[in-house]
Length: 507
Image 1 (tube, rainbow, N blue to C red):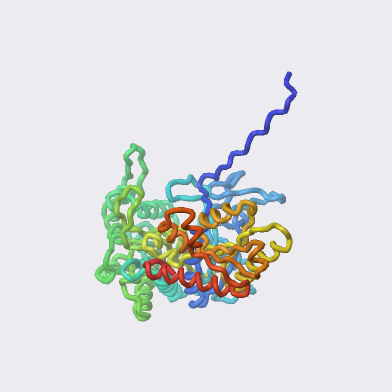
Image 2 (image 1 turned 60 degrees about the vertical axis):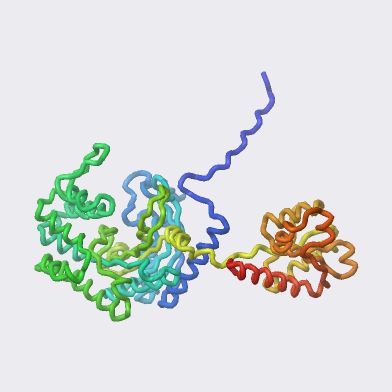
């Protein structure tokens, strides 16, 4: 029998499905983008709020626990007091909990914005991740649709602040109340028709996917897909189907408003919804936002199960090339609406609220397509090399590094194996460092440093044929007194920036 212990299995490094690592470039792009979004929100008088990643599961609204382990759609765990907690699914439910919990201390209307990661326990796929960032803005305690109009204007201003020009986006606005009025007008009012109304909402939510013909089948007898699977329809007759499709098919609200008003006449909720849409249109027009920026559009149907009044969606209208090489319209990058029932779940009294959410990752993809991100180039650090490892020499190198940093220059002292100097310059080259600082014993005795312009050196190296010529030319390297270190490095960095500018690159 072999008593030798088995060699422990080497741990395999693997990323969980549906999650991604973020590189320096992506992080900087997100920071650049969110800073611009935050600036617009602050100008509108909104204040930041941060809530934890975990909430009690029953606070998440539609994801109430209905089994022993409530992990359908959310990632859940049981606390030591046997209460279920879940990673937040969005940023709105935590806001509703925060408002309800601090209702007596909060000044209404409460205007806040939040940015952070949300989590979905769903099957990942191309472009679908289990963790992604959202950036929300909400007004709680404002019942008038002027708050909804302001949200739409803020969405438009945000997109323009990010460099998306007019004509490349539109904020589309609809109202849940109008659809409720249409459904009531075709005989689907009352509590006994709630299930059928929900089926209608789910059917028209497939408009983008299946088109009017497919939605007509889902509103009527049902639809069979290519695999042969059959989805039972809402059971409407042809007249009812025509009226629903007319509503969601309106392209020019001004031309169709009168007919829409006739369609919902006699339904208090529908008429109220039409009035609210007209009011929003008048407000945004008065503020200088034409229909090319904010448009009343009854074809906006997403989220109608959730929202109680106006709904709005930010849509980008320029073409991009998808993974198949086809030109497609980019589409939605965010949306929101009025959700008067969410805070009320905790309060037992009506608390009006409206807000919108931006999908940060999707919007970042759009901005990269437009070349609007990464325009401010990050300059890699100046490298202070290490020639000697004694305490006095190391102290001098560290002092130089701190002097550069104190002057606002990005710098680092080499922290690897300093005994092979060639490896330090290889590191600087691979890192893209613009300048290297070199001081050996001779330079230290004279109180000077060698300053090597690595960018110019790389360019000139192509013009020098052999090592002897290189050493003779001492390519792009100069000697300077220690006291002039910062000034000389600044001079070299400024010259490099001017070269990039002349070459048409970024400064």
